[in-house]
Image (cartoon, rainbow, N blue to C red; front, side):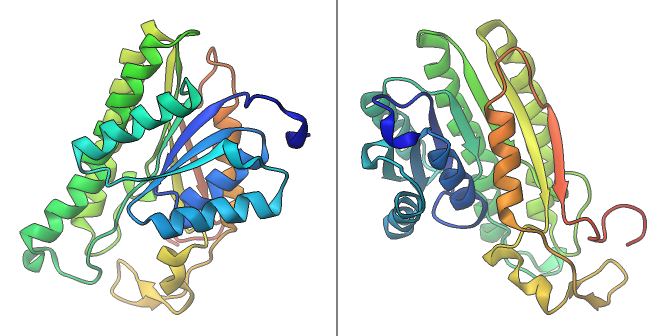
Amino acid sequence: MNAERTTPSKTAVVTGAGSGIGRSVAVELLAAGWSVALAGRRTETLEETAALATAASSVREDAVMCVRTDVSQPDDVTALFAAVRDRFGRLDLLFNNAGTFGPGGVPFEELPYDAWRHVVDTNLHGAFLCAQEAYRQMKEQEPRGGRIINNGSISAHVPRPHSAAYTATKHALTGLTKSLSLDGRPHRIAVGQIDIGNAATDMTERMRSGTLQANGELAVEPVMDVADVARTVRHMAELPLEANVQFATVLATAMPYVGRG
């Protein structure tokens, strides 16, 4: 039982841990006996995640820490991983989850540069910065190695209408995942990606009332329980470093993705 542990078995960093998929994954890992650093831009939502985890299971309070982090800012990311090293001593998992969709419903030709840049800075530059810090720590620690799981999204495969910035970053993240996976081999760093479609979170709430389809129509789309995503991430995370899920696609069974809807 978690309450009987004297030292946490493994340590994870979860970015975007204040809501949605990040929150669900963090709670799942904590309930499974991990120590978890919760990273996000709002301290109050990180503390809500920590409270949910400690209330729902026998999670020790010293197994969770909240670190206010803007992943697009190099100094914030450096401070996050330094805090993890000081508190827990090692890093076994980075779940690179922080991301933003950007303004919805804006045609490409009207997308402001600042909005484009914000999405790229968060989704792509943020993933790069966090992965780089994780790499450095995983290479130096003993035992050496660890795992990085990037949140790619179904948009790493196909776009939605008016989603150029988000889709571009998620396609780029797939390339980053492949490159990091190759470069990590000599250092026992396993890197994979989970592509998620229509998990029930605040971001997908609009799908319950209808979302724009490629043919211009609005349609209600099915969603799945975000807990199923969290269990998949945990499975990927708990594999031995000799095994890796390179890419996993987890989606609501009947969402309009495969075929023509």
